[in-house]
Image (cartoon, rainbow, N blue to C red; front, side, top):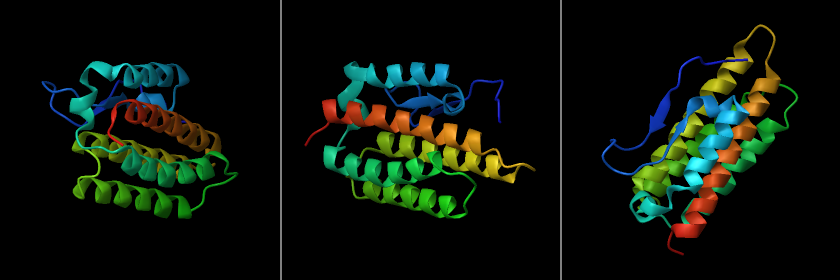
Length: 160
C-alpha cells in the first residue's frame, strides 16, 4: 500500500483562473476522497469558466470508456497487463475529445492527470513482491468516485 505523506495537488490551470484539481492522496484515502468530491461538486460559481465548450455527450463518452476499465480493475483478483492498455486507450480518447474541442482543456487535463495517477498506482501495486491487489482496487474505486463527481458537475453545468 502506498501512503503518501505529503499533499500533492494536481491542477490543470494556473492559480489565477478557476480550475479543477484533486489531491493524489484521495486515490488512497477515503477521507481525502470525500473532501475532493465535495470540492468538485461545490465549484458552481466558476462552472462555465471551468467547463468551457465541454458538452455533456462528450464527457459521458469519456466517462463510459474510463469507468469500464476502472470497474474491471476494482473487481480484479490479480494484476493484468491489459489494465495498462485499457487505461492508455482512455487517455488517448480523452485527448482526442479535447483536441476536437468537445471538452475544455481544464476537463481534459483533470481526467488525464487522474488516469496518469491511476496508472502509476496500478504499476506500483503490481510491481511489489506480493501484488497489492487491494490497493489497486481501492485506487480504481476512488478514481471512479472522482469521475462520477465530475460527471454530476458536467451534467449540472455544461451544454447539451
